[in-house]
Length: 93
Image (cartoon, rainbow, N blue to C red; front, side):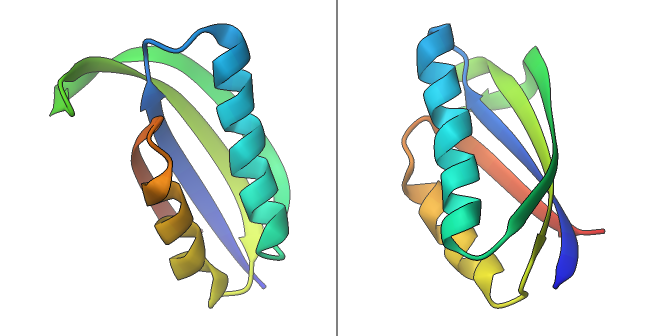
């Protein structure tokens, strides 16, 4: 198991219950792929340097987790299918 950090940019037009649903979907996806969530941080709404899918701002969410290396590609693929997630960056710590 390796340590990873994931930064997610989520659509800014979502209401709080919808955002909580996206956070839960991220955590569920980690659990499904045998990853262990260590820490999560909700950074809130921030301006983007450039537009992503016509959005000028996004809600930032950071997670630290442990995962087997082979699960990372599955996680990235799953997150790319979620229409509410604009961008995902997963890096090894």
